Amino acid sequence: MLHAMEPSALDTFRAFRNSLYNCLHRRADALFELTDALLTAESVPSPVHLSLQPSHRRGWGSLYNALSRGRIDAQALRRLLARYPLAGSETPVYAVDVSVWDRCDAESSPERGFYYHPSRHSAGQPIVAGWAYQFIAQLNFVRESWTAPVDVRRIRPAQDANEVAAEQVKAFLRLLPEEEEEEEEERVTPLFVFDAGYDSVKMQQGLEGTPCQILVRLRAGRRFYADPSLTGPPAHTGRPRRHGPKMKCTDPSTWPKPSTEYTCEDSGYGTVRVRAWANLHPKVCAHEGRGSRGPLPIVVGTLVLVEVERLPRGERRREPKKLWLWWDGPAEEPDLDLLWRAYIRRFELEHTFRFLKQTLGWTTPRVRHPEQADRWTWLVVAAFTQLRLARACVADLRLPWERRYDTGRLTPIRVHRVVSTLLAQLGTPAKPPKPCGRSPGRPKGRLSGRAKRYPVLKKAA
View 1 (cartoon, rainbow, N blue to C red):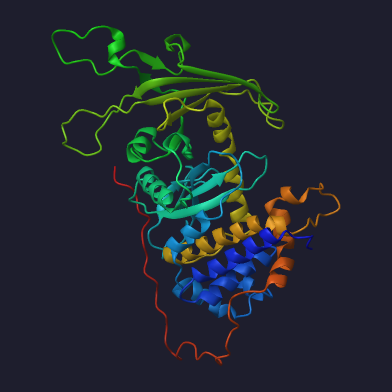
View 2 (view 1 turned 60 degrees about the vertical axis):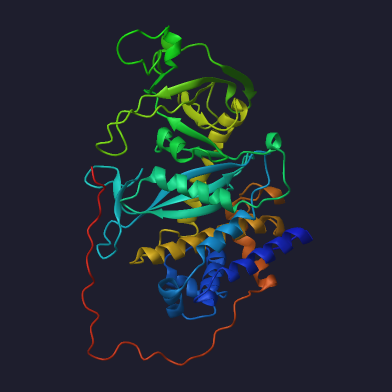
């Protein structure tokens, strides 16, 4: 079901599909038709069911061959996704988070690790064995469930998520299109938001000198220290003091006067009070490497406290808690109104993960090798981006009991319901399949043998 389409929106959607096809190299036609089948299928019980879609003109065997032997230019696809950002605020805001593809019983799959999972448990612990993927997605400040994934990488079990995130952010900033030259004071600095699973010290050290802002959530029991010069003149004997007055997040009596404060009224949260303390640093307890014997680093940043009067509708039975954040950026003072709203919008990435897993079937295939999972992940991200670009080209097809939405506010579920009509109208750049006869299959009497087993890798202590 289509409406009077804007030429710019339709041309943008068509240009993205053509550019996506150019990012697929080996088995490009099969990979592209697999992406179209993802867009048109109502559900994905298994990958082989996608071969039954009209948009997938090839046999079911080509689907698995494309995942096994296909090749996707990941760097070209990253550049393509960076050219189609969300239209929103002046300062671009990105969320960085990890989602796990659980493969607990896949003993023949290599490079699996143990990761935290909120709902699944193993031996009474909230951990699963599988592959962890780290996403970077752009956020907006409109109340909707759309995000724009721009990059995804698989974290190996021996890798540190903080180091991978720093490298991923640096690589993404190099891909951003450079438009006209702007003056130094008018240049917009992007903001990257991290959950409490990331280390604020490691993230700040890894992104030092990078033109970006970081905002990391902290646990409530942290302690921070001011400059030692605030305690008075240094002593004549002994080692110079490295830490100043202590600030305990759980003890308001130790809080000094905030350097910046902001208060506003919000329809969902009521009165919002944001306070910031600049030039604080946490105490680093250990060196990165053993035997360095050097002084521990002092990482100075800004501590932010967010307090709200109430929680939004649906969560008001719970008491609001204090939100502690750590900010660092090239500016002298942070934009407190931007910071608290940016972290609240970070939870939209969780809706994207749920849609990718439940509707597009991101973690449904039981592939053996992680390289196959990487290709499938890129196809799912490309399909979700096409849904976002097609939102302005389709009309709503709601069920009788559903709420009526305007064209610009369609949810991913609503767009996924009607995008097949748009694909049928535009066609596909993939070439039609060539009949090649029946495959001879496995020779008679030959067995494939027992697959090699791989243990789940654990990080070294």
